Image 1 (cartoon, rainbow, N blue to C red):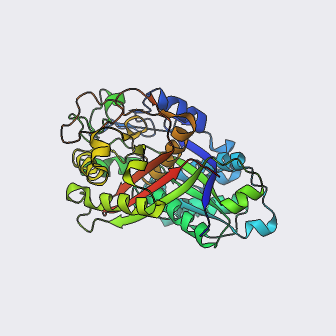
Image 2: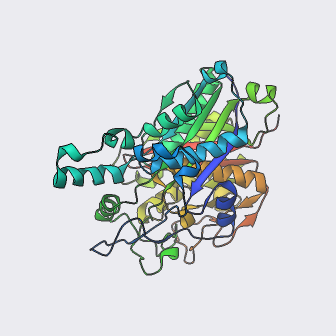
Image 3: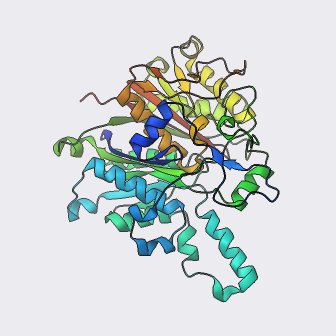
Length: 415
């Protein structure tokens, strides 16, 4: 099978617009969480905080006349993709475009437009519903709009698997390239669900932190005081190519995609399986796919959402798979959700990008707010401050509602 490498990366996160801005914020332990400004939370919202992308101008990344046609998650996808393609410098011919596809995972799509147009229907009648309503919000339109904008005529799909969506998108893009069914894949995820119905819905499940008076400390994975995740938004895009093509054109290679696996807990709609069994199987299968031993992995960017059950079960899964390598703290684990919140369908792609930057810079971003570590999670979570370490092999975990699990492994390119 073809080897697959990453040649471009783009990020739009609550910590910054662009890879450099996001990364600088993360390694300096800065939180992107604050009071919600996208809508008025004064009327009865139990959670009034989120990790918003601030200062974002869609017109910087797409045609101004098209902005009215799309929900917020789509400009995020367009922006991250534009950045990634610029770094990759693909220079595609017409023939190349036939074998260049787009897989962008999206969990919920244009939730705010669904809510807005439902209210329009109720109060003003069906004749006032926008003709752009449906195409603005369906999940596959992130991939569709990217495909149209950049002329990519290979497969265009949206993987929708809750918080694993974009990790699945990257993993499945890997498979298309390995099989020789494509030469280039734009793969990633986008999400924007900080809307009244989104926050109300997650709050009704008691899934969100309610630390409204201290937003920057609200997301605290593996801390004994954690009380739920913080909703985030944004996008991440990776440009993946076959090694053959990347070498032929002299591309700068950021990393190799070494392994991928997907499993299901088959247990509960929201709770992880006991001892994180489904996540453990995903990690084991990804290691097998990468032809690596557990001791080969130096860093895990964990799912680490700051939920009471999820964090504990993931730690148990890591211990199950990595054993003494993890318990003796030779394996470092951190959750960048402590700073950027949970980007839901976009989380896997953004966190894959974090792994790439950790390998490039030899810096491990911290788990901030971890001041009183849960004794049921006795791992090295790189608390509070970033650390230096040369990383050659990194893992990224993404687990979602419905019991869906995805695991990606990246390694430094060695020729």
